[in-house]
Image 1: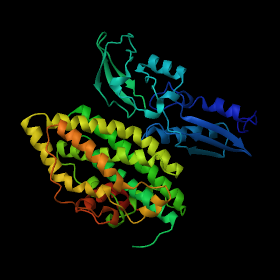
Image 2: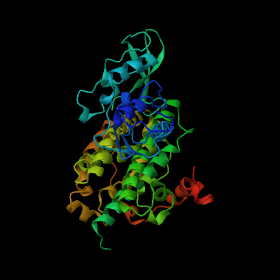
Image 3: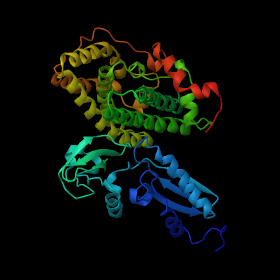
Image 4: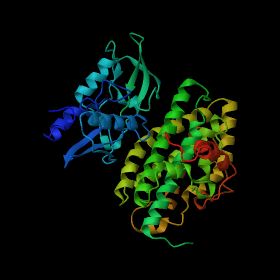
Length: 170
Length: 255
């Protein structure tokens, strides 16, 4: 398989390639972990990748789109369309278990599971079960409902006193 | 009244909804580096981003339906005041923090009612946009309700300021419950929301929040509108001059 020759074995190869594309803000999470990558297909050499936005105004989406295009171009796929689908609306419930574990290991408390995704968001204070990613204590307090990005809130552990980000459920 | 075909009506409708979002998003972004404390710095700009994201979705859909080469950026940056169709309440200056949060309560309560209905739209893209927007509006409404309560049932100074804010803004709310030129056609087609039907629930929601905040509901003796017809307050011109500055100074420039 030459460097500039696309692998002809279809979608499986594409998915494998795209498994390296990560969230630019949270680089431990792949687009699959996030549930942002919805579909990949190839027909007559034209690759179509379907992604769904997390928050409406998330500025990372444009970067993710370019990263997808760059990754595929570097692997020899010259004809790529990245399209966005809005429906069904992205929910944190689509985040994979491995994604949640990676977040926790990175120092971000993962989103609580929603009781009912269609009535999201849960209020941050209703979420319960938020554990400190450093020491695992459940004695945590919210400092700010809004953090460094639209998707995160700022918490502090009352045991180890470390602050941490919480990925809000949506 | 000009008569419209459904496609043109849909484009106009989407652009108007995008205008509401972009103008308010811009106003909220003006708090960046000016917020009263760091937590609000993050909060107000995050909420601004939600509105700007919403504008992008509406404008992009309008451009897609229009299909004549115009992009979301062209729609945002290449129209002047008379072509903008946002509600007047969104273009008003931020004033002090009380004015900003009073305006936010009035708009957030409206958005919750509006997007609840738009979820049922026969247009799947509008329904999908509503599904995303409503989740964020729930956060917004909870936030503005809590702030109004804190300010109203706060100190003498905060109470005075938030009461004054509602007194000044009240007459701008009525416009949200009207009907624009293109809407009846779209309402009949099950695509658009009949905004006139939203007022009662809005009043209940807002009155409850204000009463809990020990505030007086203003008289409602005057009301002003015109936004959907492109007739704006004196504020929009200055706002667009800033928002569109780069395109005006360097026409056609791209990143």
